[in-house]
Image (cartoon, rainbow, N blue to C red; front, side):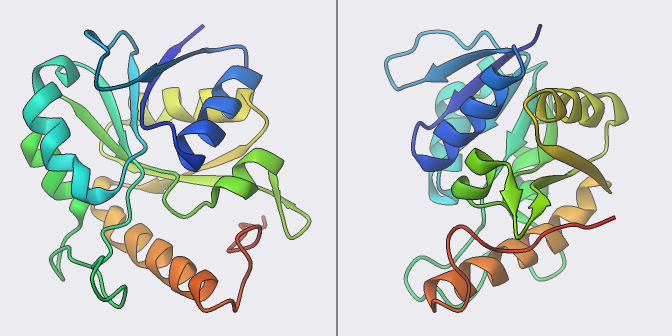
Amino acid sequence: MTTVSIIGNGNMGSAIGGIVAAGGNTVEYVTRDTDAITGDLVVLAVPHTALDEIVAQRGAQLAGRIVVDITNPLDVETFDSLVAPADGSRASELAKSLPESTLLKAFNTNFAATLASKTIGGEPTTVLIAGDDVDAKHALAEVVRAGGVAAVDAGSLKRARELEAVGFLQLTLAVQEKVGWTGGFAVAA
C-alpha cells in the first residue's frame, strides 16, 4: 500500500484522492496546518502560482519524495497564454527548485470530472505521466491503475512542455464552451 499526500483539496485534489482511495491506497490531505508530509508520492494539486510558496515552505519535506506537478501554467490575467519558457515547462523549472525530489508531470491534461467518472467520451480516462525516473513513473502508474484509471508513460520530463500545451488547449476550449468540463481529450489504443 502506498501513501499519497495531496497538497490542495479542491476539485482536482479531491478527484485524485478518490482514485488513490479506490485503489486501496492511503490519502493524506496536506493543509497549511499539517506539520509533516508522510506520503512517498506528493501531488501538488494547486494553481501554478502557489508552487513557489510550497517550495519555500515545504521544500525540505519534499526531499527524497516523488513530487507530482499537476499544474497548467496559465497566464491568470489574460487566460490566453502559458507563462512557462517557450523551450521548457513549469515542471522543469519546479524540478530545478526541488533538486532532491523526483519530479513527475501528470493529471494536467485531465479534468476532475473525468477523473471522478473514470471515463471520457466512452473511453477510459487516461493519465499521461512524464518524468525522468522510470521507477517513479511506474509507482504513480500503479496507484492510478489500481484506482481504475489508465496510465500512459508520456516520456521524459522534457515532454512536460507538450503536456502543459495540451492542458492549456483543453482548458481554453472548456472556458469557451467548445468542450464540456466532463469532456476533453481521450487516449484510445
